[in-house]
Image 1: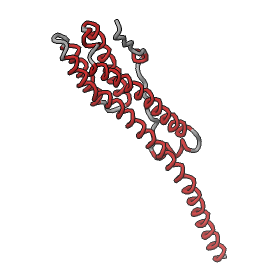
Image 2 (image 1 turned 180 degrees about the vertical axis):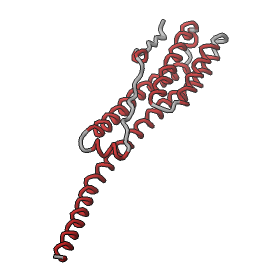
Image 3 (image 1 turned 45 degrees about the vertical axis):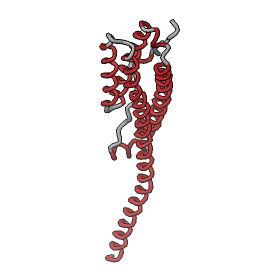
Image 4 (image 1 turned 90 degrees about the horizontal axis):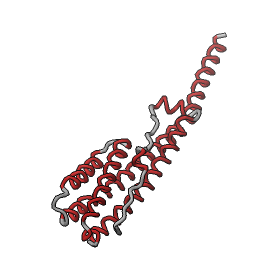
Length: 194
Protein backbone atom coordinates (compact mmCIF):
# COMPACT_ATOMS: atom_id res chain seq x y z
CA UNK A 1 0.00 0.00 0.00
CA UNK A 2 2.78 2.41 0.94
CA UNK A 3 4.64 1.49 -2.23
CA UNK A 4 1.50 2.26 -4.27
CA UNK A 5 1.24 5.77 -2.71
CA UNK A 6 4.90 6.43 -3.48
CA UNK A 7 4.34 5.31 -7.05
CA UNK A 8 1.32 7.63 -7.43
CA UNK A 9 3.31 10.52 -5.93
CA UNK A 10 6.22 9.82 -8.25
CA UNK A 11 3.85 9.59 -11.24
CA UNK A 12 2.27 12.92 -10.27
CA UNK A 13 5.67 14.59 -10.07
CA UNK A 14 6.65 13.14 -13.46
CA UNK A 15 3.34 14.36 -14.94
CA UNK A 16 3.85 17.87 -13.54
CA UNK A 17 7.41 17.99 -14.88
CA UNK A 18 6.24 16.73 -18.28
CA UNK A 19 3.50 19.38 -18.44
CA UNK A 20 6.00 22.08 -17.45
CA UNK A 21 8.45 20.95 -20.13
CA UNK A 22 5.69 20.87 -22.76
CA UNK A 23 4.57 24.37 -21.74
CA UNK A 24 8.14 25.67 -21.93
CA UNK A 25 8.60 24.08 -25.34
CA UNK A 26 5.44 25.89 -26.50
CA UNK A 27 5.98 29.22 -24.70
CA UNK A 28 9.66 29.95 -25.36
CA UNK A 29 9.50 29.91 -29.19
CA UNK A 30 6.28 31.92 -29.15
CA UNK A 31 7.82 34.50 -26.83
CA UNK A 32 10.96 34.67 -28.96
CA UNK A 33 8.83 35.11 -32.09
CA UNK A 34 7.00 38.03 -30.45
CA UNK A 35 10.27 39.56 -29.29
CA UNK A 36 11.70 39.31 -32.81
CA UNK A 37 8.60 40.95 -34.28
CA UNK A 38 8.76 43.74 -31.71
CA UNK A 39 12.39 44.36 -32.62
CA UNK A 40 11.40 44.49 -36.29
CA UNK A 41 8.92 47.24 -35.36
CA UNK A 42 11.64 49.10 -33.44
CA UNK A 43 14.07 48.74 -36.35
CA UNK A 44 11.48 50.00 -38.85
CA UNK A 45 10.66 52.99 -36.62
CA UNK A 46 14.36 53.80 -36.29
CA UNK A 47 14.58 53.80 -40.08
CA UNK A 48 11.63 56.22 -40.30
CA UNK A 49 13.46 58.46 -37.83
CA UNK A 50 16.62 58.12 -39.92
CA UNK A 51 15.04 59.31 -43.17
CA UNK A 52 13.07 62.07 -41.45
CA UNK A 53 16.31 63.23 -39.81
CA UNK A 54 18.04 63.15 -43.19
CA UNK A 55 15.38 65.46 -44.52
CA UNK A 56 15.64 67.70 -41.46
CA UNK A 57 19.42 67.91 -41.95
CA UNK A 58 18.85 69.46 -45.38
CA UNK A 59 16.81 72.30 -43.89
CA UNK A 60 19.67 74.49 -42.55
CA UNK A 61 21.27 74.54 -46.01
CA UNK A 62 17.93 75.37 -47.59
CA UNK A 63 17.30 78.16 -45.07
CA UNK A 64 20.76 79.63 -45.65
CA UNK A 65 20.31 79.52 -49.41
CA UNK A 66 16.94 81.27 -49.18
CA UNK A 67 18.35 83.81 -46.69
CA UNK A 68 20.94 84.79 -49.26
CA UNK A 69 18.18 85.99 -51.58
CA UNK A 70 15.62 87.32 -49.13
CA UNK A 71 15.96 89.96 -46.49
CA UNK A 72 12.42 90.08 -45.16
CA UNK A 73 11.21 86.47 -45.02
CA UNK A 74 12.36 85.89 -41.45
CA UNK A 75 8.96 84.56 -40.34
CA UNK A 76 8.97 81.79 -42.94
CA UNK A 77 12.56 80.83 -42.19
CA UNK A 78 11.85 80.76 -38.45
CA UNK A 79 8.87 78.45 -39.04
CA UNK A 80 11.06 76.09 -41.03
CA UNK A 81 13.78 76.09 -38.36
CA UNK A 82 11.24 75.48 -35.57
CA UNK A 83 9.58 72.68 -37.54
CA UNK A 84 12.97 71.03 -37.99
CA UNK A 85 13.52 71.17 -34.23
CA UNK A 86 10.14 69.51 -33.73
CA UNK A 87 11.22 66.59 -35.90
CA UNK A 88 14.42 66.19 -33.93
CA UNK A 89 12.57 66.19 -30.59
CA UNK A 90 9.77 63.75 -31.53
CA UNK A 91 9.58 60.72 -29.22
CA UNK A 92 6.76 58.64 -30.67
CA UNK A 93 5.32 57.78 -34.06
CA UNK A 94 2.45 60.20 -33.42
CA UNK A 95 4.78 63.07 -32.45
CA UNK A 96 7.02 62.32 -35.41
CA UNK A 97 4.04 62.33 -37.79
CA UNK A 98 2.88 65.71 -36.45
CA UNK A 99 6.37 67.21 -36.57
CA UNK A 100 6.96 65.86 -40.07
CA UNK A 101 3.65 67.34 -41.22
CA UNK A 102 4.63 70.72 -39.74
CA UNK A 103 7.98 70.55 -41.52
CA UNK A 104 6.23 69.73 -44.80
CA UNK A 105 3.99 72.79 -44.37
CA UNK A 106 6.98 74.99 -43.54
CA UNK A 107 8.88 73.80 -46.61
CA UNK A 108 5.72 74.53 -48.60
CA UNK A 109 5.90 78.10 -47.29
CA UNK A 110 9.40 78.35 -48.74
CA UNK A 111 7.91 77.45 -52.11
CA UNK A 112 5.65 80.50 -51.78
CA UNK A 113 8.69 82.66 -51.00
CA UNK A 114 10.44 81.32 -54.09
CA UNK A 115 7.64 82.70 -56.26
CA UNK A 116 8.60 86.21 -55.16
CA UNK A 117 12.30 85.66 -55.94
CA UNK A 118 12.76 84.32 -59.48
CA UNK A 119 16.55 84.44 -59.14
CA UNK A 120 16.27 81.90 -56.32
CA UNK A 121 14.60 79.45 -58.71
CA UNK A 122 17.71 79.65 -60.88
CA UNK A 123 20.16 79.00 -58.03
CA UNK A 124 21.72 75.58 -58.60
CA UNK A 125 22.25 74.96 -54.89
CA UNK A 126 18.60 75.71 -54.18
CA UNK A 127 17.41 73.46 -57.00
CA UNK A 128 19.70 70.65 -55.79
CA UNK A 129 18.40 71.03 -52.22
CA UNK A 130 14.80 70.92 -53.40
CA UNK A 131 15.58 67.76 -55.38
CA UNK A 132 17.14 66.25 -52.25
CA UNK A 133 14.01 67.16 -50.27
CA UNK A 134 11.81 65.49 -52.87
CA UNK A 135 13.97 62.36 -52.68
CA UNK A 136 13.73 62.45 -48.90
CA UNK A 137 9.95 62.64 -49.11
CA UNK A 138 9.95 59.46 -51.18
CA UNK A 139 12.24 57.71 -48.70
CA UNK A 140 10.03 58.77 -45.80
CA UNK A 141 6.98 57.37 -47.55
CA UNK A 142 8.68 54.02 -48.17
CA UNK A 143 9.95 53.73 -44.60
CA UNK A 144 6.56 54.66 -43.09
CA UNK A 145 5.04 51.88 -45.18
CA UNK A 146 7.70 49.43 -43.98
CA UNK A 147 7.12 50.50 -40.38
CA UNK A 148 3.36 50.06 -40.65
CA UNK A 149 3.85 46.61 -42.20
CA UNK A 150 6.07 45.61 -39.27
CA UNK A 151 3.40 46.93 -36.87
CA UNK A 152 0.71 44.97 -38.67
CA UNK A 153 2.71 41.74 -38.52
CA UNK A 154 3.43 42.21 -34.80
CA UNK A 155 -0.11 43.29 -33.91
CA UNK A 156 -1.60 40.36 -35.83
CA UNK A 157 0.55 37.95 -33.85
CA UNK A 158 -0.65 39.57 -30.62
CA UNK A 159 -4.31 38.88 -31.38
CA UNK A 160 -3.95 35.29 -32.59
CA UNK A 161 -4.46 32.34 -30.27
CA UNK A 162 -2.41 31.14 -28.36
CA UNK A 163 0.14 33.90 -28.92
CA UNK A 164 -2.29 36.44 -27.50
CA UNK A 165 -2.22 34.67 -24.13
CA UNK A 166 1.56 34.55 -24.03
CA UNK A 167 1.72 38.17 -25.19
CA UNK A 168 -0.56 39.31 -22.36
CA UNK A 169 1.29 37.29 -19.74
CA UNK A 170 4.66 38.64 -20.87
CA UNK A 171 3.49 42.26 -21.22
CA UNK A 172 3.62 42.82 -24.97
CA UNK A 173 1.52 45.78 -26.17
CA UNK A 174 0.16 46.59 -29.62
CA UNK A 175 2.52 48.68 -31.76
CA UNK A 176 1.35 52.16 -32.70
CA UNK A 177 0.91 52.72 -36.44
CA UNK A 178 2.43 55.77 -38.11
CA UNK A 179 -0.59 57.82 -39.09
CA UNK A 180 -0.45 61.24 -40.62
CA UNK A 181 -3.33 63.65 -40.30
CA UNK A 182 -5.69 64.29 -43.19
CA UNK A 183 -3.95 67.50 -44.17
CA UNK A 184 -0.67 65.61 -44.43
CA UNK A 185 -2.27 63.28 -46.96
CA UNK A 186 -2.29 66.16 -49.46
CA UNK A 187 0.99 66.31 -51.35
CA UNK A 188 2.21 69.89 -51.71
CA UNK A 189 2.64 71.12 -55.26
CA UNK A 190 6.05 72.52 -56.12
CA UNK A 191 6.23 74.44 -59.38
CA UNK A 192 9.26 76.63 -60.00
CA UNK A 193 8.31 77.39 -63.58
CA UNK A 194 5.77 80.10 -62.85
